[in-house]
Image (tube, rainbow, N blue to C red; front, side, top):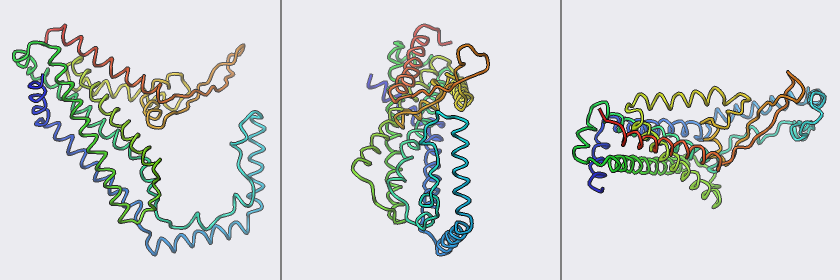
Amino acid sequence: MARLVLAELRRLLHRQVTILCLVGVLLALGVTGWAVWEGTGPPTEQQKQEAIASYRQAQADWDRNGAQQIKDCQASNEEMLRSDPQMDRSYLMECTAEAMAPRAQWYAMTPARMSDAVIPLPYLAGLLSLAAGMLAAGSFVGAEFTTGNIGSWLLVEPRRSRVVASKLAVVGLFTAVLTTVVSCLMVVGLWVIGQMSDFQQDLTGQAQASLLAGLGRGLVLAVAGALAAAGLAFLFRHTVAVVSAVAVYSLFSVSYGNGDSWLQRFGLLQNLEAWFEGRMTYTVNVLKPGTTDAYFAVQHVLTRADAGLWLGGLALASIVLGWLFFTRRDVA
């Protein structure tokens, strides 16, 4: 088995698509780093002057129209209560001078906070590695069928289950290493940018643990996605078919992600959000009993466990179906 894995690993690393995926990851990391640097660099003297001018203008406007703004705020709250007397009062605006008057700190050009900057790292590292891993895995297995190399490979190792296992092991190992390297590069790059831009170093031990946990979830997601892509390639026998299947599922998620259908529960975007955030809420409109056109909103919660079961189930189903079809069908 080790001989098969090493041989498959060499083949994967020398494939043109794999090299292009790695180049694409490096370019994406470079663009992301540049965007962070541009968005969090120390303020220039001109930016400081513009911030001061904006605050003074807002203060002057408040001095002239503050009383009317408070009345408009109160009227808006009253309108919301009239339209929905049962609404949660926490959604109402605080219509007081203390809450609405402009404050100097809102316009201050303060350094970026490291605790805020690390929040998107698990998403970026996980999703970038997921895309690269799935493309490399789907192409790696799909090309074996389109080129006919799978037949020659079975002459070397006729036991098909071992062929499937070796390819899955290589795909999982490649994606795990890729995700780990991407995560480390992002963390180190952000630290370097933070040192150069004088970030507020307010990252607590709890925040560091949360960051590591998020990066770990990104690693699990990327590996599962790559294995699923390999399974789909065994099932459909073509890279384009794998890409099409993922595109159709993504399109389904976009179509129902912003609606009020119960199908939101199975959307890719919704499950990814729940996987990284821990939970996400979505609303389903339900027809009121005894009526034909009156609906009421029911809020549902999608937990990380729910998302893990759904996404993990999809990956497992892809792998099992791919293995079953490959071991029971002619490769020609």
